[in-house]
Image: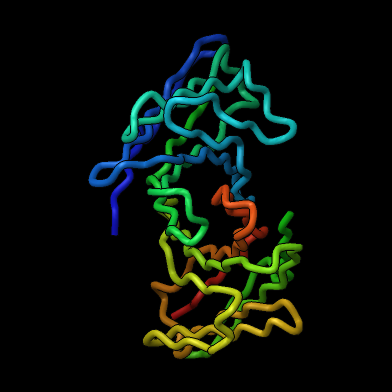
Length: 117
Length: 116
């Protein structure tokens, strides 16, 4: 299957700082990428859908100014958590699909664990 | 919009037992897809199966099998002769076809613990 990478895998930062998480499709072009958030022992919550070259579509309740998403190329999407606070600590997972068909498989990255002190 | 219910929060079995994980979904789409993913302690999601709503045939892959019942909107997952390495969180996730956005809606997950 196709490979999706995330960087960093783990980050610890101080409250008030901004953190950028990268999501890359290594061997395919991802027209669409998704960002999920997962709290401990909880399900994955979709935060936003990111399409290359256009603005991300955020799910209800997700602050777009807090979680900045940029999908500048067909292989890279970034999530920036701005002015992070302890409640932003979570496991962030990205995924990518190639093409627009809902049938296309979604490939997941390994996740990034963010801890805000 | 899709919704999925995984009623079993946690299941504990002894190795070699068979175990079935339940999944009941709701969707307004006439065409949709159903997925199962495994999330081991490492956190990375592992794709297990994708099922088209038109294909109601049950599927078997090694020790894994899936029972798709469109009439009851269920897509249950059975592990035969469970092993310790099967211990993980399992997510069922429908995805709409008509919306064509590719969004996966995850259930709450079932934590499976297989004891030696």
